[in-house]
Image 1 (cartoon, rainbow, N blue to C red):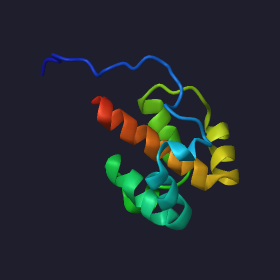
Image 2 (cartoon, rainbow, N blue to C red; image 1 turned 90 degrees about the horizontal axis):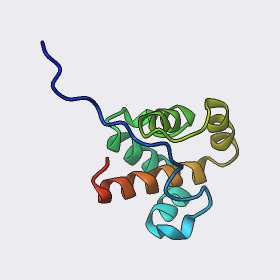
Image 3 (cartoon, rainbow, N blue to C red; image 1 turned 135 degrees about the horizontal axis):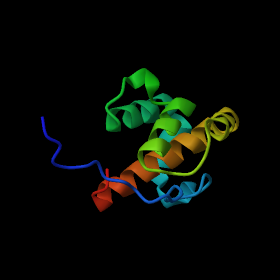
Image 4 (cartoon, rainbow, N blue to C red; image 1 turned 180 degrees about the vertical axis):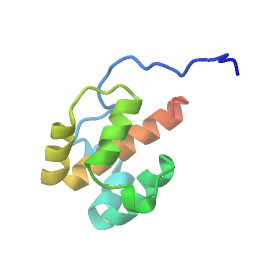
Length: 104
C-alpha cells in the first residue's frame, strides 16, 4: 500500500481563547456552568470519543497533541483540577473556532 498524502502538521500555537474568556461564547459558558456533563458529552462527540471521556485532562491532552498546542499533561491536570468548567469551556470554544475555520 502506497502513502499518497501526509497528515496535516499544525504550527504550534496556543488555544484560540484564554482560559477565562467566558464572554467570548456565552452559550458555551452557560452550558459549562449549568450542565458541565452535557458540555463534556458535546466535546466527546466532537472528538469521536465516548461521552464519559469528554471531561478531564486526558481529552485536553489529546486535543493539544492533535493541534500542536504547547503545554504538558501536568499543566492539563492542574487546570482541570482547579477549574474544570473553565478548561472545558475553553476546549469547546477552540473546537467551535476550528470548525468555523475548517481546521477541525
